[in-house]
Length: 177
Image (cartoon, rainbow, N blue to C red; front, side):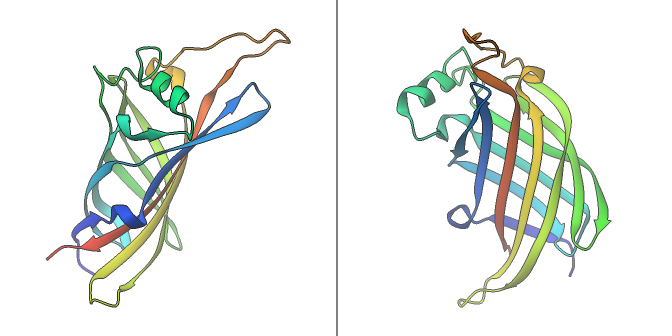
């Protein structure tokens, strides 16, 4: 397959995360509004150009009060930093449709290089003749690396919110003409 432009199908794609709460449980959430520019041969991502932009205001942890707090200056400060962005800088094949995708991740005005493990899940035509390709990605970042340091010490020791954020993406792309 040749390198072509792909649009993300938001109805068949997701960006999810989880973080430790009180050092004993995981709280999960999603971002519902995002866009991407992908120019790639899905069967060989090593030459791909990938850009993501996430609308931080679309955060959803299934708790309105928590979501409002996450949008506040204590965390994402969406008034000043409404987007999370990622732009690939290097993609290395690990074989069998597995890749390490490294790029510049910008959160809360801070840009750092991060690597995500990406899997090409397959490609095919939908019932209407549109060519689709599927990808999944996983990675971990430290929120403190991006200036997201709000926390509270627990009476029994430890902290309310973990530093490590686990990220997972499931993306379905539609080949553009």
